[in-house]
Amino acid sequence: MKPLSSERRFESARRRFADATQDSTPVRGYTHDFYRYPARFSPTFVRAAIALFTKPGDVVLDPFMGGGTTLVEARILGRPSVGLDVSPLATLIAKVKTTTLSEADRSRLDSWVAEIQPRLSLRSALRKSTAVDVDDRLANLGGQRAWPLRKLLSLAVESVQELPTNRERLFARCALLKTAQWALDGRRQIPGVEAFRRRLIANVGSMLDGAREFEEAAHEARRAHAAPVPLRAWCYTASASELSKMEIVRRLPAPRLILTSPPYPGVHVLYHRWQVAGRRETPLPFWIASVPDGNGPSFYTFAHRSNTDAYFRRALDAFSQLAVVADRRTIMIQLLGFADPPSQLPAYLSMLRQAGWTETSVPFGRQAPGARLWRVVPNRRWHAKQKGSTAASREVLLIHRVT
Image 1: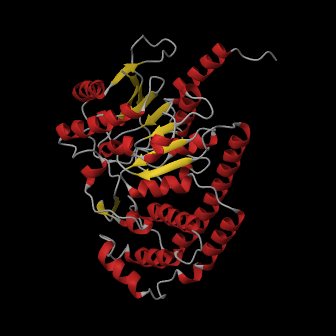
Image 2: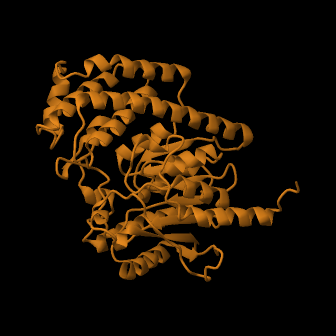
Image 3: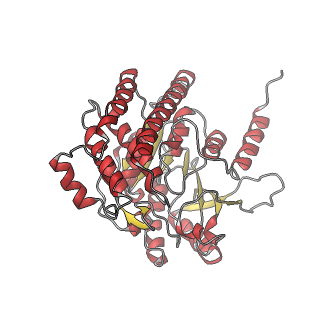
């Protein structure tokens, strides 16, 4: 078979990218389903964007990494990546999803989830320190339906410290996050003790399988693509406005691709809380992850959804810093929605111009020059979606270069 020319390969990649922008399949594969982070990227879209706009060894940056989808896909495609997020919960999840485990790690995690089963009982005693933490930090989990799972989670969390390596402890916390989210977040019926135990065993097993699949793909990427930069993912709890001061950014080449989904102006998204017992908010995920959280919702979304002036000021700081670390070859791709697209999209584009970015486009099939692609957002778990089809249930694809 005659090999494709570079032009035909580009056309093929461009078609895949156009198709991938409309991808609505469930997020799965590798480590992608370790945790259901709000406003997750489609791995298909991320994979297509990285394939079209970068080559092996190019640096990929996601300054609002959330659950780390961009970093996972970059790693298995042979691209070093850097991810930032102001939420330490996001950093933990992204770190777990991009960390490879040894056979010893997997064996001990398998043993851990089996050995703690008899201890996950309402009759088991909690350590005093854990019990104090439970009383102080697990808001809205004291009702008759939720307290049994609160007890089980407390027992499981204290058992995590028995694992010998930090990799294993972070993985175990992520498995507990995944299981507790299934059991509590937005649930009408809270499952019982036995169902929780079974689900935890199943989740650890499926996550270990995903971690092995990720490790094999990452190993193959290292074997196939020798690069001057280590093929790894760096994850940091930091604001994008701090980017140019970070040592890792000064050490690495300028990112070839910035691929991200920033906070959406005017849209209510709960990045830092679960909703339990009639949509009451709980900081439970931060407690399970053992990471600090003393911030309100506006900290994670640039500003309160009613304060768009503050949103655009903080966004300007962040995207100005992105322009500093980029170069003339850098492509920035964003997917984002708006509470009021007719007014907020022009304001957002104006902010980007002020920050040093110029909009560009990649023609897709019959799309008119300069037209933008919009997509319906599948499976979003935030307040706007509960009201039915709203402006925030659609996202626009934006592509920019440094001015």
